[in-house]
Image (tube, rainbow, N blue to C red; front, side, top):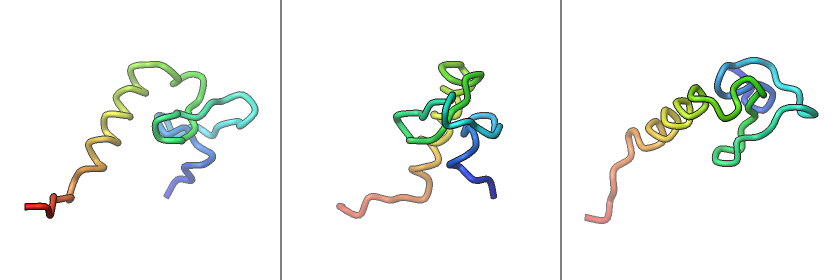
Length: 60
């Protein structure tokens, strides 16, 4: 299992905390090559979709 604190959540490349940034929405590192790209947007969408899988509202 990858270490999400030291790898880009988009491409999986090891990140450098001095030069790479954190995605503010998920607080995960993103490398300079992926930052702001369509690949990052797609990874965000996939993470958001995955967060809701298996959850059912119990308020009814």
